[in-house]
Amino acid sequence: MDIVILIAGVLLSIAAACAVWRIIKGPTVLDRVVATDMLLGTLMCGLGVEMVVNAHTETLPVLIVLVLFSVLGSVSVSRFIATSGGKGDR
Amino acid sequence: METIDNVRDVISLALILLGGLLAVAAGVGILRFPDVLSRMHAATKPQNLGLFSILIAVGLQHPTPAVITSLVLIVGFQVLTSPVAAHMVGRAAYRAKAFPKDQLMVDELAERIEAIEARERDSSDRGGAEAEADAGADRAAQRAAEDEADRIS
Image (cartoon, rainbow over all chains, first blue to last red; front, side, top):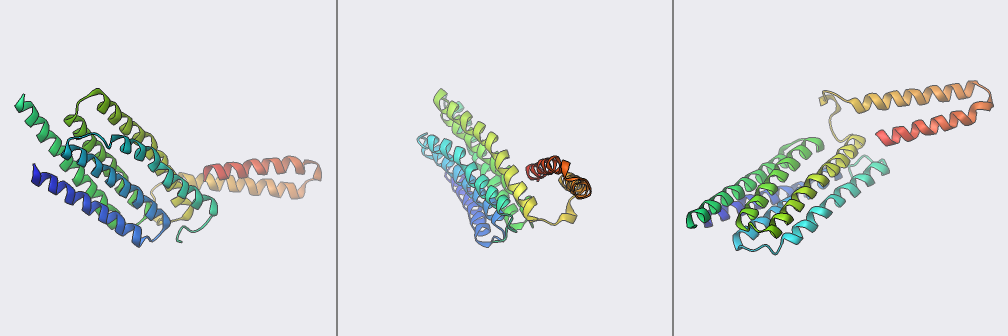
């Protein structure tokens, strides 16, 4: 039980670190948007794992709000890039 | 009763491990893939499936109506909103030309954009040659064509 939880935590941490690395490296804004989306998804996975481990359901409303608003970031940044006509490399 | 609880725990742990493995697959994909479109492919799919498996694990641990309803809401909203985000990001990537074009097998959008631009050229040529009487109609047609080009690309 404990070792499985530990492994899951390590795996999620690796995924989050990969996403953060891609956010830092870029090279385009869209890469960062995709990586931010993925970081948020990893965070939601972590919240779910924490609920299972500590046997409570108090962060379910947080998950609902996150899943509703996660789309806004990507869509607004993509709209901005699409209308500004930039190369997407700034 | 105890065995049922044990089975539920084991299934939950297996689902959590699956979710973690899928998250790592997404992380490796987002690090190793070369351009935006393939990174989108790598990041979104394992992420969604991993989230769903972890949510199923939560539902197995607390099989009450309130929790199940919340989980169904979360899964439903994720399924509804992630295609929208992926569509917008992909469209912006196409416009920003943030991918190697020669690797595309099919590019239907380029064909349509080309057709619309050709039609625009035609209508502006004709507008220069003919009398000013249908310059207004031409302008309207051109505006419509530009609108369509904006809408599609």
